[in-house]
Amino acid sequence: MALDPEHLQYPNRTYGMDHDRYEWSMLSDRRPVQWPGSAKLAVWVNVSLQFYPLNQEGKPFAVPGGMTMPYPDLRHYSLRDYGNRVGIYRFLNAFDQYGIRPSFAISTELAERAPYLLQRICEREDELICHGWNMDSLHYGGQPLAEESELVERSITRLRELSGQEISGWISPARNESENTPELLVQNGIRYFCDWVNDDMPYSFHTKSGDLTAMPLSNELEDRFVLMNNLHSEQSWLEQVCDACDFLLQEAESSGGRILALNIHPWVLGQPHRIARLEQALAYISSCAGVWNAPAGEILQHWMAQQGG
Amino acid sequence: MKSDPGFYDYWPYEKRPNIQWPGGARLAFWVAPNIEFYELDPPANPQRKAWPQPYPALPGYGIRDYGNRVGHVRQMEVLDRYGIRGSISLSTALCDHHPEIIAQCAQRDWEFFSHGIYNTRYTYGMSEEQEKEMILDSLSSIKKHTGQHCAGYLAPALSHSENTLDLFAEAGSELAGDEAGFYTCDLFHDDQPTPIRLRSGKRFVSIPYSLEMNDTIAYVVNKVEPRRYGQMLRDNFDRLYAEGAQSGTVMCIPTHNYQVSCPHRLKAFEEALEYITGHSDVWVTTGREIASHFLDTQYDTALANIASKQGAC
Image (cartoon, rainbow over all chains, first blue to last red; front, side, top):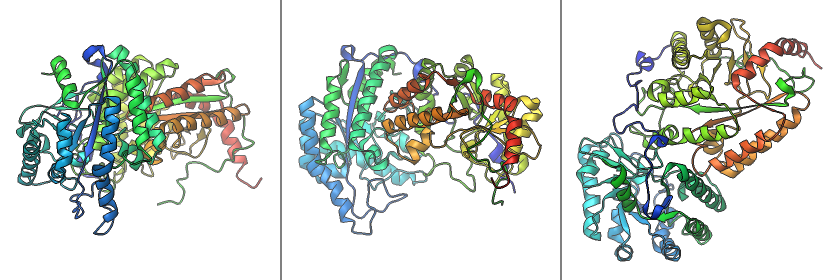
């Protein structure tokens, strides 16, 4: 019994990363960033507005949050739809109450299906991020290039047509990518994406078609991950957000501006028994001195002016 | 395959010889940060997949990279504040990839022990020669990059063969005699150090490295809320500290810079460290120092006591 010799060969065992997508860089070694108004912490709230098709194919895997029962899985289909019909309007009220300017990552198919919702967001002049075609249109390793190329192009172009917005940000469904996704995004005019979550600050990500910026939209603190994956209580989610806010504000005292990124879903926190926890989180964050709230594109613009290129 | 690995005999947690820690401490406390390198595209082990998704598996790779880019320094600063020297469970390829981290830890006189070369290269399916080569490589890397003789082992991703502990002890002897390869963190059968039986007869111990207090087990497997994790650490300490009044105990917190160092989890960890190190009779130490002290002062007594307990009471 033995493994193939390649298992004891280490061709990438050299300085830096084991790939060429980005440079190895410790956060503590980077130049400090200054946010507007001498703020310490940029708070970025991202709302994921998602369409989960009833006839889910699950290729190459069933998306987390998607259908789990035999067709027709009405319970999960309608409970996700609940977020876009009901929960989101609770979110909007909460944002208005605390003066939060979020970004909205939307499945392009949802933008097509719910023109009222799209118009409501566009009238608020909030930033839209393309969140792929729908939650069952995954980008994945081994996906034929032509198929993915068409999917990316259709998702971004159609969202631009529907919204009239530039659309410079991207989040893949399930944050899953193929080896070609970053190139395809650049080729379609995307400037930043939120799939690679390996930092608390933006960084440059290389593609054969030019650089993207990776924006640090935390997975570990998102409502779906904490409540649905980890099965933590609503109160614990609130505590985790407050603890993260406190910590990052403190770190920013000596290290320069930091980002607190909250990815939230109206089908999760928009429920009647959870919405108060979101309101309390926003109230806490808003009450802290040194906090600047802005959507992703605006945070990126300030970061680029100081650290880009 | 065996029904029992044969490393140790039954040894009841009562009427054992008293363990005396330096300075009369009740409890030896050590923190073991796992500093790991996971490959984005490792060769596929026939028995265990590195990542759930096809290449590129961003989610798992990304958060682990986060640990090295962002989390490491945060954890190090917290340990500094409480006078704790880490005992690093090291993916030794990290010496090549991220020497900055190695330098920071070496400067603080932290201990480095072997956690294999990459945490995406599993022992499963290796021949004895291959596993020996991998272990020797990891020990040599630690010596080359830090000057330390590696004393301890935690198999990469806790992937073992029947020979793992033997091979590690022998590799240590080959490189530095009794100065290297004399303790393991791979076994979870006790709250005190225990002698381990090896084919070479080398004096070798298992040091408690708690699976239950491990942040990844707590957060990922058991899905514990951060503040509850902090409470678990304090409860674990309270009981071991109380029992340590009779005979010295060991408490270990195994950590990962991608778990405990996330902004929403550091507070709970730091409060637990403040609590633990705020007690007077705690020996804040390293894995190597615990193992050496036990081997020097308790090992022979323990062996005799274990032998005396093999019949009915």
